Length: 145
Image (cartoon, rainbow, N blue to C red; front, top):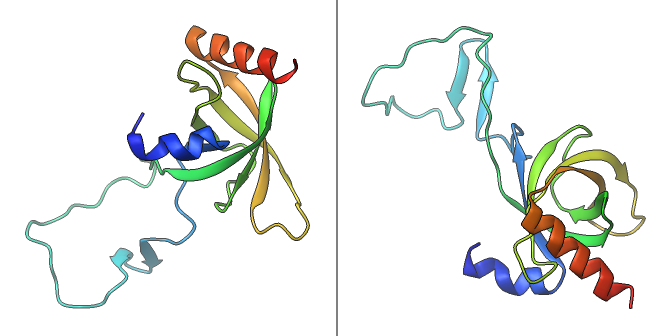
């Protein structure tokens, strides 16, 4: 875990890495010729490129900061500036207890938060290691005292 995250995590912040999702603002735009850089300047490639089959699937992992709104053993409500579609899978990292907490989550719903600018994302935990499970159990036990 990087040091720049510690302050946010202590205050309920977290970090999420969507698996296979593009950022909100595209770095490329698609035209009839395929992908082209957004600036239309002179050719800048130093080496030639080759076309690939249309069926080749890739994942683009993107990091975004989110805020942890609430949490249970089965999932969490996250507030985010990023619009993550329902079904998005991600790796969540948060400081909820004495040990690292890093479950895999899936977005199940988006919640309208009224005048709040961030979108609320209802997520379920798809899996977590023993350290994450113990960290979450300890956090929930202390929070309910």
